[in-house]
Image (cartoon, rainbow, N blue to C red; front, side, top):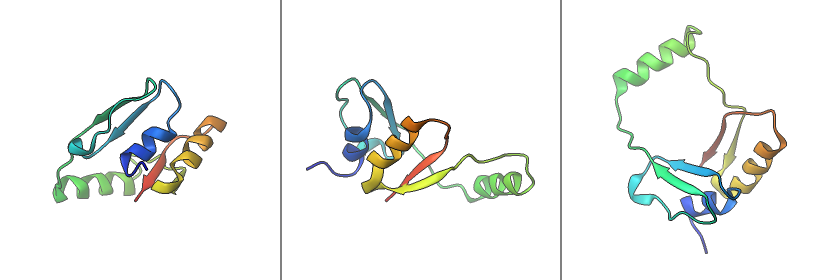
Length: 91
């Protein structure tokens, strides 16, 4: 049974991509779905600056909905409906 990131890749449509934030958890590419990972490090000062910019309206966020990781297929179905950006999967 697939777990973690493999679940998101399983839910991706053929030919799409999947990017995560844990390089050592990058699953293999399947069905033309490419995978990648970016490294993220904690930086409280930079995070505080981003929060300030959002609070001031300089930056805007585009999180339309959040979905549990187990509902990744539902999130992708929502994307396929169109008209939405910024879906977030949470563990």
